[in-house]
Length: 225
Image (cartoon, rainbow, N blue to C red; front, side):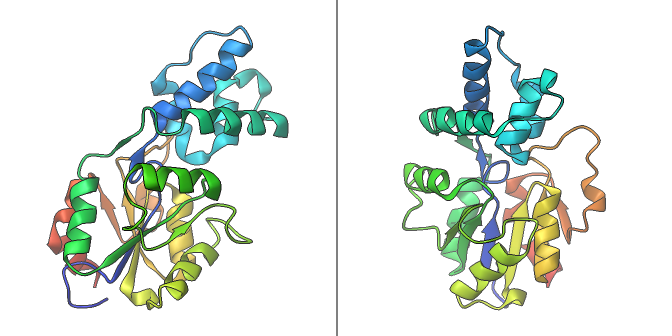
């Protein structure tokens, strides 16, 4: 890592790390439930599953399936979610200031998410990030997705940045697993979506961070060097 306040490249997961997209996900599953004559699901019940993806959220919304979610239900989820995309999402507290600070330092930031690329590409311009985000990699951009290290390795290579000059920030164990496999330093975002019983202390991240605002604390980045 360089001697500046931030590493040269900070890569982020999207849902649960930069963006609180749980309200859009909730609207999606509740439309699916309504179509089947079922009442709405509380946000608190869905929220822990958001970072696990459409299949996991569908399984949580329809427990009678016993975790066996048919592919057509996944397609239904994605179709409805595209209609709900961005309607209720908000940035987590501190994210806007953090991204501005990274840019002001002369560093760059990008997004590596498991969300399908076509959906992620709709969110970025809606947030005014299309000229700010250095790279966007979705879950189907490459032949592998997290926890495989390929997306992180590809991002660093595409931006001609050494792995030692990158840090990945994510709220799920597979984020940290991907970073470790890539040889990249990582930060576990504790403000994200985690199911009961998750133990981020055991993920192997280089640091645990309670709030995005904590990432404005320059000493934290210095400790990663």
